[in-house]
Image 1 (spheres, rainbow, N blue to C red):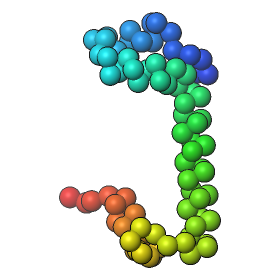
Image 2: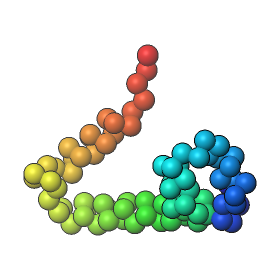
Image 3: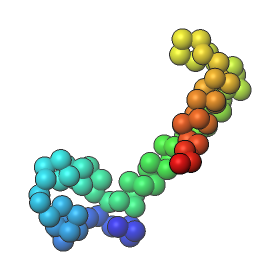
Image 4: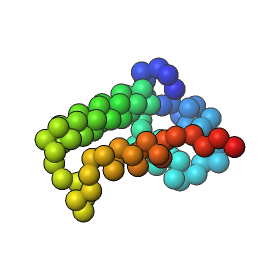
Length: 83
């Protein structure tokens, strides 16, 4: 999975021994896990850059919410809960 190569039939059998159609569809979509991860990382970087540009330009958010409120909500969602 950490090599830059397409999944083989052996990989499919190891990952999806029950031949679940949803997992098979996902694996067919991914094809090459390494390249898929690179693409996801690239999309995350583009999203972060878009957020930075919009925040600096003070673009309004959904329903007129403030950037400060968004930052507090995101920070709140990612703070681990201690039990």
